[in-house]
Length: 448
Ligand SMILES: Cc1ncc(COP(=O)(O)O)c(C=O)c1O
Image (cartoon, rainbow, N blue to C red; front, side):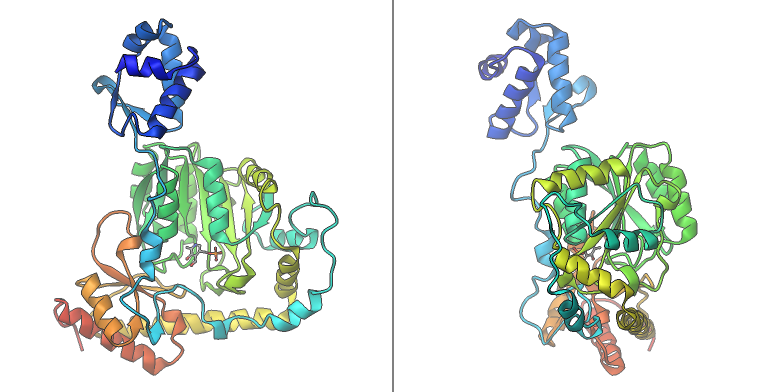
């Protein structure tokens, strides 16, 4: 082994050793799990000091390419590859086409505010004078800051919450870092963390948000990022209570973890805006998506909080898309102060709350207790995911299997976007169909 390594190392300083070994790992010549020689053995082989090899090892460990396991030795770690990340696709990959597709997690188009008149009003503006203009329209930044749940050191606008999460993760998470997420959580976040080579720690939720005991234990592993959904958590529908947010902030204070909050649901949540940033502004990055409230095709989310992270994100983005369409920003700005839009979003919020409550109540009559109180999705425990999704598909109804949302294998669930069902009778019928499918799959019949 030392002979092979020596051949690959062109420059015999710490950087050259790290680069040479990195190339061997990337090429697959040093497969995952390979035990590397001891520092002393490699130093002898290369005729350098052990300090030089130690420094190279530190560099490789810092990017997560290798891992020291104490007396057992130092090993090559898993490198993420293009094959990683298949959960997201499985969410809507049902057994066929559905008359009623409730697997999507999307808002009801009939409840979105009307775009036409507002688009027409902003259409003719010339909004860009230079590619180096500030990425956010100043008036939009003002409006966003007025509604922001804490005083954000920096704020920018990107193309949706997932764009924000992707870019924040690129700034904060290095190969091999630990990242805390709620369990269960939104599948593409898990796919993304797989791609980055992060080690995911899933922490359970209760009806006030992330479990404090679970978070406390996870923080002992020194994560670089804690990912939370403050309102209408997808898939569970749990909204973080103010009391829990404060306790979370207390646990995180003094750690080096960055808190990333994905307020994906925005103003159609029944719960008020909430952020750990109220207590930890320098450690929190809050994301507000406008997809569910104003429309997914606006493709806009605001990101504000910890200046080091948000500024690094914006700087890097300058070398890519640069900014999010100022035409769409102007549309959003107009919508934020348009009374018709504000009223429509309030109506949508009430409708979603009614639909969700009606479904939970109907499930209750079948003895099925589902968590959460907020948003457009219902997370429903079932006896068997596969047979339930197939039985519902046979009746033309698509629901999402629960497995892609789960960090670890847990009790089977399905996620149903109940916010898409506008008819109270259809909601009651769906609960009957689900209970029957679940019963056929093995769950004892509940109360009637
Ligand atoms: C938790 C969560 N985050 C992010 C997103 C994506 O939001 P956006 O459309 O803003 O990218 C969704 C969409 O369903 C979501 O549920």
